[in-house]
Length: 341
Image (cartoon, rainbow, N blue to C red; front, side):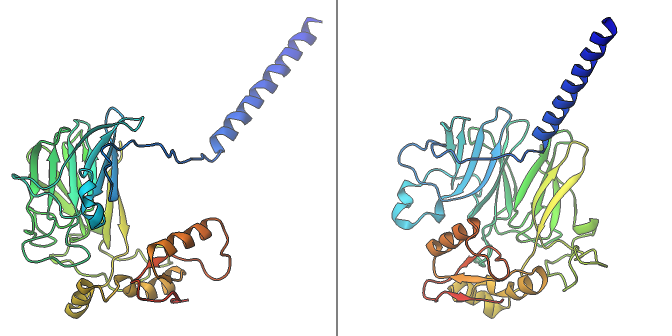
């Protein structure tokens, strides 16, 4: 009798353990779901946000938001919130600061924010891209602030980039990351240069830089020659970065870089047309997107039509033809037309 009971208990225990294992495995494999919290965050003073370009978290799990006040329509720009906003988890605004001030070069076009383990806030911008700026302008610097918005250090200076091999300035940098253990600032210097560059976080001094595959960055930024992409057999892809857009360092010291397709260099005539708003940069990449990536384009007359189409695509209501790369808005005077198929 005792043996029978013991075996029964063992069978029950094994069955329970198996059920628990199945339950844990199912939980691990379950795809997480997310829903928008329409009440987060709470923005006081009737402030308005422009294009939100970057978000960071700090050691207290506070959320830092960087936006572009200059992107707000002129009629609402007087209500623009400061470019840097700190929120707690509940969405309550704790601090706000930033913008043009004596003593440093605030970015013309805010792009990246990072808060390091010592609670310093790093700001980057990509002013000067994609439209050329007048000489002596453009975001060729990185700014380091306290959490209260007091400047600690500036690396580089506005409009002073000397090219892809410059050790004193960046050129329209996209992203920053601080490796606290080594006191090193990693910069994805991608909109105006084609490199990863590293500075000392305490002194701002240059330490090292590299291009794709560890190659030495070319002295001047230039487009990669047409080659098969890495996903195509027999090629490692371009030998220099296109547009290094993000950089992260893992706990084991591995550096991860997100690279983007970059446009061919524009001729002086095309640059003038871009500045005048009569030439869309997207036109230069359509054939590449269609031929190499298997997408097609659909031009939209305005942002509202673009959002409506994107909603249709997400709902699966557009099922025919090749998939779209993100639908691109064009000048309001243009009619809706199907592009490269």
